[in-house]
Image 1 (cartoon, rainbow over the protein chains, first blue to last red):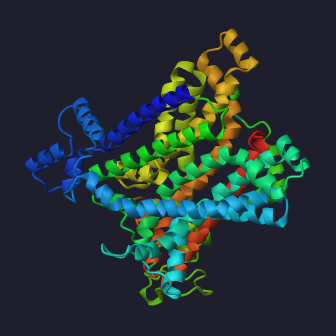
Image 2 (cartoon, rainbow over the protein chains, first blue to last red; image 1 turned 60 degrees about the horizontal axis):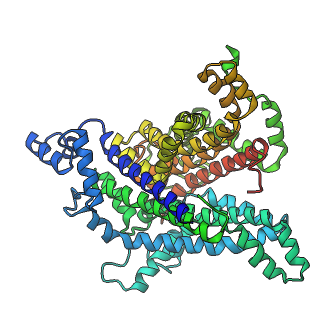
Image 3 (cartoon, rainbow over the protein chains, first blue to last red; image 1 turned 90 degrees about the vertical axis):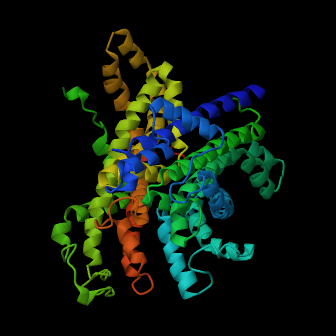
Length: 313
Length: 287
């Protein structure tokens, strides 16, 4: 057990190091000088040199990399060029909507997908099963930002149940902010529920015919207990994996969905940073989100160890 | 050098079996129609794609304008046909590029034991970035052009191909005929191309279909955000972005391009599912 944990930990650290390297490299593939590009054609040589040093683009590549890694390790992701504040501050201020949007979407997706997926597998081949498979595939084909626009049009504009955009301003109460999150979370959650539903159904089908399920039935155990306790528990590993994967996809979806709903989250921060060529912010956001993904994956691997004692790394 | 080409020996067979399944048949037929419509856009389109007509701006769908007109009086149906060209060719190019990068990475990791760990960790690290976010960052660095969108998405989806190719290569490497080829002194590149690669084509084809679907969604997302292909070029994503501003008065401007995305992606997924069931029986578990 300890060995497995250490093995995974080591793997995670290596991947993290590679993530930092990739983020470092991305800005360096910019054709030409990023500082000159950011300042435009009229900038003076002195201004460009100053910005280069602010961006950490002066010195040799090795020096730049050393400085960057040293900063990242100390939690210093550099300064935003346009917001005039540390990248970490900018990210922290925008974290809340993104965090809640991701969590709520994941809750909605799971709340739909688990029961539907289990029931579809249990009633395999039924009309319900076929309808589920079709709807899930359809949902996976809908761009979440487009669904979001349709929701705004219908629920916010036509019915007036929700505000069309924003997060209620800085002094808004939690209830108001929650109200702003309903539609985006619903749009993202519905689209993401498709993948979890399909996997839940598939992995339930895998176990429902297993011997121990038959044994449990022949013992006279109630169907309810057989399906939920014996079958579902054993189907859990692939389901956990896909829920973790969905969490990562949700962050991606959040980038676009936030923009649609005018939520001041990390996603809209990145989009505005791209439009303003604020490279440190783009790098910081990439680093934090990829880092979180690696951590979530690590947590899922650890969860396997708990859920299935046979698992060893 | 006919042997170098990598034919799908059972291709006619697969096609007929695909058509035999109602869901994949629908996917295939719809896809063929969409591709044909895109190719024939100049013939089918009732108007020129950028023909402005202020007099007929934001007209509702009618016989003259099947899907209505946009804010500049341009025919939405016409623009959707032309947008299909961009969206489909971007999607397809992404599949080709990610397949090339991914196959090289996957073969390397799967065939050469010493390189497996470093390449696999690199793949893990690349997979840690959410697809749209990494694509946004790459496009931001490279510059927002259609070619760079393809490059960015090609890099983003390459690890998925690499994983599939690596997994297959690991198995194939140990098969007797590969061992025999090694023992006979067949050069490694020849083994890789003739014996390993041609057996990887099936999973590659399946994964490629799903990447096509994902790439279309991702391109639409990037174009919608205004960080991808220039808004002047009609793609389904840029059309939704334009239509969004007139959503209240003219819902059709954003509605139809979105529907086009849904239909295209759905048919690709149906096709991908069918291909997977036929070509990759190990994975064909009712997913």
